[in-house]
Image 1 (cartoon, rainbow, N blue to C red):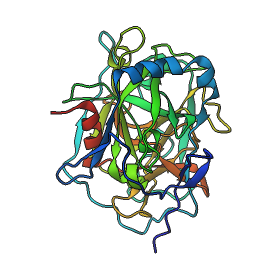
Image 2: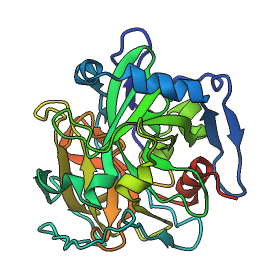
Image 3: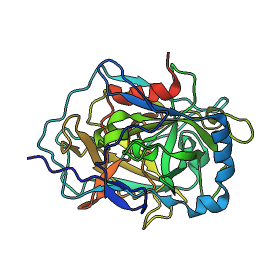
Length: 356
């Protein structure tokens, strides 16, 4: 029997955890954009004046005071009985690329246990390290911290510069709950700070010019579709994000049995949000609690603030974003779950990138 859905999200008035099952129509300016065979994508375009205002808003003091977005936590345990659905199309991937003039030379290590078709029993195997020196080198520097205002509260999540091909806009990938509250309201004052460390922004801040997620997340808080993308403008020096950080690749409709490097900026105890954290873990379980497509769980103990951080396949070679830090269970502090990346994930990315 499937467990009842009790995902927790942020309330507007108290800025505390509440059930993420609220329903309301999309906020003004949000237009669902359906694609054949895919969930609708909702986009919210921001005027240039809003982007400039966001850069002015996020002073060092406000960044320091921003709170980690509360981890979406569920009671009970994952429902591993329901079968995982098949991919919604052929496996696709677009490799990442370093900034102009830079090369990629990374040998990614593996965690103690590799991918297993049978999965693992909790606690799932993983390793965790602090990224202390490589945070300004590609592909690490494509990961960063996301600052935003949601329902009047100032929060932090994580994100990454991701492939825009065949589109033309510059895109940051993150969780749906880091761009929308799941009850029909988009964020404001969003900026992305790549390679953030101890309050520094070595490549500047990149303001949001558009916010994108699935209608299933935006209006219903559906964790199967907790997918988000942000179209960003230039930093205060007139530089593009890709010119400073390069871009990670993107993969969808892949096998569920994979090994990932997961990144983020966990800020809730015992972390402080000042360092990039890397978990390495393999497919451990498929969570069918919400129906198909089942979400995917790996071992990782990152906390609130890490939401939206990328799960990267073939780290150091193709650098393919293929998952994200989305939610966990109160009974599993050493596990992290992500939506399965099918064609809907690519639809969100492509709408943000303005693909033809």
